Length: 282
Image (cartoon, rainbow, N blue to C red):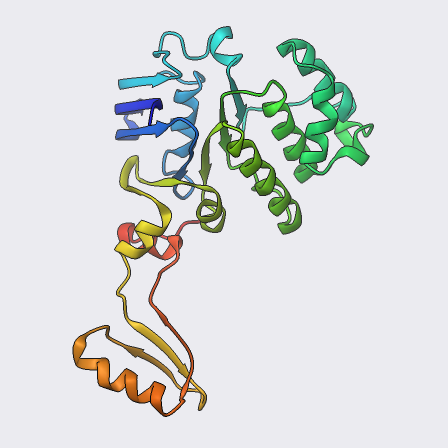
């Protein structure tokens, strides 16, 4: 599959502070790629370099076939959508007028506004002034803004951080629909449930370095103990090693109808991250 993004040996320093030590990865065309890590791990710095907001200290970056000298140009911005902590709206305008302005800027059809406002669950509020919106509502308008010109590639930096579970689920459905239509999504998050449900592959970023990169299910399987976790009807919770020596013990529990539930160990992405780095994803 064709790569839409290639990063090799990326480094970024702010004086003596090293934010990105040595990061390399590729993003395939049409996938949802997640860069996961806690606050301060280097996620936002990485996404700002990839979108031209920051310059790199060293390494090679190619996005949509453009190198660092072209990233951030008008041609680049016409092909990508960006939702970051620097994204902004015109507070005195309505939601609709904000998006109408961006339609004109990107030469996108005005019909896109109603389509996107339904996708982010804001169609009924489209005539509200932005200054009167909650943080979560503004976040949804910013997401609509990032998608207004149907970009080939979307960068989303913590896109659902201010959303309630209902709107988060609504946005997730919209993002998956967008991805199914061919848009590549680059997502940064510390929400492991979000990453597990959306991403084709995830990279764990820890202290400026990628320590794991794979399909979420493969990572969970790789770091599983494969033990059997059994709950009996008597209320016992047993953990039995998945070895031939324990086959008769497990068979006995089943034969005597003692097993209420049984599953093999499969850690969450958050638990995998904790195991690999020794840090919680918060």
